[in-house]
Length: 406
Image (cartoon, rainbow, N blue to C red; front, side):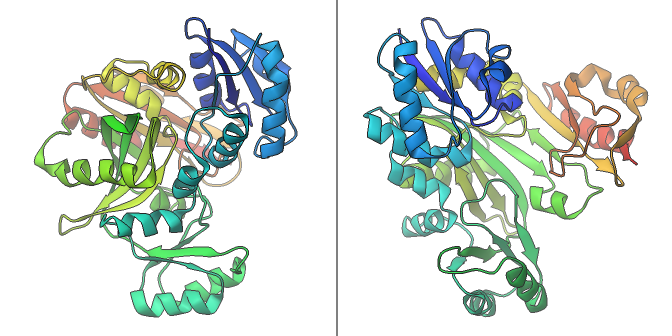
């Protein structure tokens, strides 16, 4: 009977869904380490065997002490330590090393967390990625810009998603950005080429260094464009057909990238671009399951509960690759204006026109505070056997639905 510790710093809905999946596996005793009190988790994880609250779930010492405290409550030694939050991957790896538990090494997690180190490794293995520089001074950033040209992207080296990421189009904007977030040797900033093209993701499952499964998704438009343009509604499409020549370059490059970075067992999320000339560039690779409802989309596209499949992979080391049965897409609903949600327009029209395609929806609630992210205040998921039907449905959906703030 495996004893599993799940590190859940915060009681976020996606985190709890993965934790419930792990707790529901046959014979598993699940303990949770969290900054949240047990009362916030117990009702959300019915099979929770033990809980330990820590002050900082990103601190290695507290994680090690927490696992040791949970072991007796689980009735024996801890066998597995897991978590899905990207920022927690390195401290979890360090704690596992201290405790003698299996899992990704600290050095491998650094390859995924440090985006400058990641791109250095990718280039060393002749894999396509954006030109970049990790700069400790504004002068270094300006020198890189002179060599590379504009536009550029400025972001933290260990960022997640599009958070704290900025596009700069000229020298003036770069100076202003570096003045607002001044780099230093202790806190460097990553500057990289802004790749013009269509953005996609490559989500994969690996077991023992073998890359067993992949899924490809297309973004409409890129998350960075969405963050910079408040009126744009972000959509993600999973085409049903992903084995044609169109995706051959990423099917070749992505597994080699995962091997170069040290991926052994787990789910990964790779973001990549296709330029107008057909060439590709890998943007970032994360050593954790994808966020933003992607795991739900994977589940719906393959008629498989990927939350449970991830838990089965991490706890028992088993995964049976499914076949893609459907095209699936999601439209994220972002509020327009300022203030809180005051109205949701077009709901009835959307139900009449494309209701037969809707398989899941979370509509914003009146009074809801805007999230300020590309995921917005709610979402609607569509599914159909034909990719074009889903694509057209998403386009219609974002014209019909409007979330008003005030």
